[in-house]
Image 1: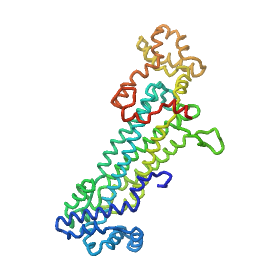
Image 2 (image 1 turned 90 degrees about the horizontal axis):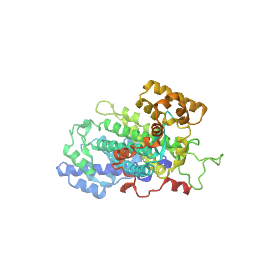
Image 3 (image 1 turned 90 degrees about the vertical axis):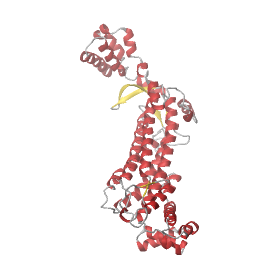
Image 4 (image 1 turned 180 degrees about the horizontal axis):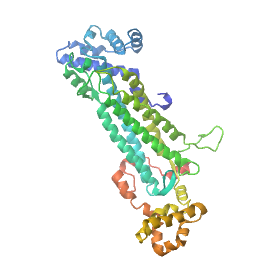
Length: 454
């Protein structure tokens, strides 16, 4: 992943230095277990702890000749360790090192992504509570539907990313497996207790049954989970992009002092951050099919998965880490316009209350078919001729005969659509209170204050 879309802590997981350090730790832990079992001299793990090291340039040089990265690594380590190196990697196969290392890297990456999700959830809860009662129009098919609140939009996003966290926790647990089982996974030349020792020390669990590799359904689920999270990033980003459109303008990305939106049009304030997030989501999702195809390896092992994972491991985790951090920034500073929401809600003469009028007529005794025809006829008059939907409805003889003024007032009351917001918030956040919870209160700023800062 290019530096523009990378953050240092995640990138460091995939650096050659980190990878080889993990390899060396795996070999050292295996030697410790073997020494305890009397399979190698106790001087071997001591030598690895005291002198174990490697030279990346030297590894690259050796690999150009032997065409095998693990052998090149072991040769470089031997040059530091000396005679005891002949017992290093005893009974093991390359995949024992490679797959266990990848498990360590992916669990570390998952931990960073889980922290990213926690940060995003804090911001989403704060902003959802801030705008819990700000009424806005709901849209289906891009067309005005019925009123909702902006807080509910954000509560929906919170619940979605809370599910993402649960899925990632499960995927992390699934990928955190260690294999030190030797060629074709039979433990013919390495004791299973070595695998158990290495797994425990690395914070992993022993793979119950491996071939010569850890089963790739685990990896497929991990990358599929990242793909789903990326899709959630895209969904929320697209919502912001739509709301920032000039003719909508209910919310927009914060536009900082000195920022420029267009080289040709000085008036532009474009949703560049959320557009960027949509692009990054495509990158992450692009890894899902290759990860699925990696499941079907030949017999006990081939290496068709190897090149794929060397690309998608770093690229997906680095990109998603960056995307979650950027989305958190966007939502934290999002500028919200409740007044514009109310204006849009009223823009079509109140036809968004047609459903409530339909229900009122059926409750008054009119058949649903007749009520639908009456309401639709007046709604279409409003669409085509303009004016007030309520005025059209009140003039309709069938409506006048069926509904009192009180019933009409209730049908056109926006509070009808917000009366259960607290119930939904309690389901999502565990509290119906309108105040931010303790963990989301820090750094809270209202949209109106943000707007004035602009």
